[in-house]
Structures are given as structure tokens and as C-alpha cells.
Image (cartoon, rainbow over all chains, first blue to last red):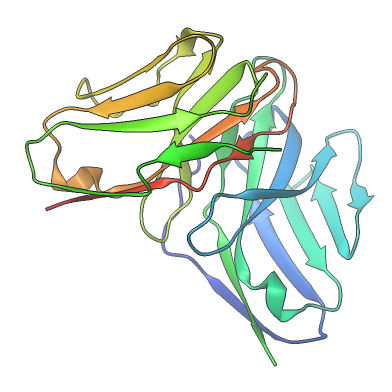
Amino acid sequence: GESVGLHLPTLSVQEGDNSIINCAYSNSASDYFIWYKQESGKGPQFIIDIRSNMDKRQGQRVTVLLNKTVKHLSLQIAATQPGDSAVYFCAEKESGGYNKLIFGAGTRLAVHP
Amino acid sequence: GAGVSQSPSNKVTEKGKDVELRCDPISGHTALYWYRQRLGQGLEFLIYFQGNSAPDKSGLPSDRFSAERTGESVSTLTIQRTQQEDSAVYLCASSLSAGGTYEQYFGPGTRLTVT
């Protein structure tokens, strides 16, 4: 079935530490995955994406890892900053068809000084 | 350039009233999507448009919900006879096309509160 969130889990980290946010996706037919960041009162903002033919992709301070065997996605943020505090969502798109995204439940990242 | 805009930003309405939520996509984006986000939860797909057509309305929760798009631009989401469970943030996104994996750009949302 489609993933719809429950109450948000929270990850608390110290400023400067690395953060790892995990996501389990539901559809083995999904071939494209995205991480979004949502700050309070704003719409989600694209961070990084990865296609199913890759297992790792790096951006600026962020890395996404994909494990298709166990249908698991993770977002790593290096040297976490207070501005990284937000809710992070993973989204998946099924192979073929149109650009319909199914969003995960979300994880709240709280960065403490 | 201008991003996706939505209006109103906040709407408080009484149970049983109808509401209209508006979305202005990025100019030139042919695809437009509506999502609902309940407090503390993820985004729930409602409907998408490619041009002025809505090929997938499967996410609309009931027949009280409808949406239209005109001129391959502005879209309105209408909720008739609102109920308290309709209270949520309604987000709109647009992308260059609904085909492929074009990035979806989100607006700030409309927070709907049904009293």
C-alpha cells in the first residue's frame, strides 16, 4: 500500500555532528527517489535525488544511499548546522507512468548548539 | 524568478461551508499537483494536472473535493461542505511536465482550519 505518515520521529544532534536520516520505502517497482526538506510554515524543498541504478549520490554536505535489497534509503548530512533543523521527507516514484510521488512519514531533525 | 504561489495562506471556515484554494504554478510548467498534509504527517497526493486535464484524481478523499485548472495556469481546489477532518495544509506543486522525473516545486501551502 501507499505510505502515509504517522507521528513524526525526531532526531536530535549537536551542531557539527553528522546526521543520518532513514527511510523505508514501500514499492519495489520504484526507480526514482528524492529527499525533501520542509521548514516550518514552508513547502517542501528538493535536496537530492537518486535513481535505482545507483546506490550512492553525493551533493554539497549531503549524501543519499539506496539499498534496493531491503528497500531502504538514507540521507547523510555532514557537519550539521542549525539551519538544517527541519522535517525531512523521502519520496518515491514508480517506474514508468507519470511523475507521481509517494511521500514517507518524515523525520524531524533538531540541531542543538 | 517567481515560484509557486498559493492563496490564501490561512483560511478559517465553519463546518459545512465551501472553500476554494488557489494555486499559481511557475510559468511554463505544464504539470500541477495538489497534496494534503495533516498536522505532523507526510504529504498525501490528491490530484494532478497535465495541462488542463486531470488524468489521476484517485487521491481525492470524497466527492466533496474537486479541482480544476484553466489556461494551463491557475488551479483551484474546492472543498464543499467542509468537515473538521478536512483541516490540514493543502500544498500545490508544479513541474515542467508530468512525464519523467522533473523536479516538483512546492508552494508555501494554505492552512485550512474547519471549526
